[in-house]
Length: 261
Image (cartoon, rainbow, N blue to C red):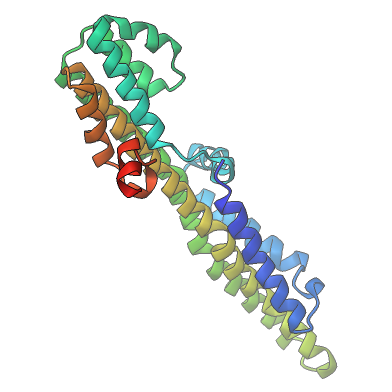
């Protein structure tokens, strides 16, 4: 699990709490049920209204992934593909059927099973590309949903403030209460901006980043198994796959480590 989202949100809310404390304000002045119910409830409701019920359910099922999603390890993937290439080179492509039964990755399982079955390389590429495109399209549903919540929340906060200010104008005959009432009115705007920038937009960005990394991982696997099927030399295959990945995502090879020394 990559804790970046949890760490970031804790630091963001911690910074807000620090500001409130340094300003001498009270946290209870911001934790008002009425504006919070309006902002969070109405934001989620209009997010639901802008899509389908299945989109809504799918998006919230994807929510834990934003916090507990595992970042793919391209170096491990490259090492596994090179091992498979060495096995295929020494024992033949049919030997990969055993590996297909053992791997947990459904994408790699499909690829290895088709190679063992003798599927044509072009047909296999089309199949794997379709799998990748379907994965990317599926991920976009949750990404778009939470991004839309980030767009709706500030406006809904303003609506809450306007409603509260209307109530303030109804009580101009009691000037002693105007100050607290006006301050309370702006809490809705605060929660609209806060929820958008501290919750919904970061979740959307995190899901997009994880999706991009997983699609890149699947593309790396696809190119690796297709080259393996074509009989590529294992060492050359490893170098080609490493060239497809940014250097900071990789573990240095023994040769690179000795050159640096």
